[in-house]
Image (cartoon, rainbow, N blue to C red):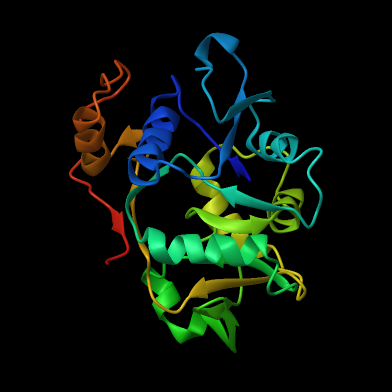
Length: 239
């Protein structure tokens, strides 16, 4: 399965950190990380990676990463501004197997991190489905679309096709996603119970305290562009 990586990092450290966290927590993961680049010198060629030359523009980058992928194909959407801290692999592997077996044909997305406002019924429909052994709740829109999750290509392609050509800063997309109407056929879900914990890598272009600690623990050198880290530590999900 292609893991589509949207990265804004200046020297790939956040991408490398995210991938290493997956390798530590999920050594036999099924993903081939598809990573955009403009400067080949920043590519770290290794197994289960695929580098795609792209424009520096965010919208164009995502659409380039999705080129030659069928609308109905499943991908793992994983922006490097998030990284996994805990994964309930027993449950996540069950979800992945259900996707492989195509058990629900009109399912277009499964998020296994139920946190924040997705605990609020306001952001959900009344629809519940059984997906393998998992109870899934249908999401109304694109809230929490930036957390790592399984999606069909058409969900992300539609979202970014309806974004402006030029997005000055990534943070703008938080508001933009609410301006895009999700097609009724793009049914995306979240697990009724949370199965993961993610950390936020950066805020305002500055690495968060939690990510800084994880980088050090994983043997990464802190980049020289990193200013003093703000008093910010955002963790998403509790298990």
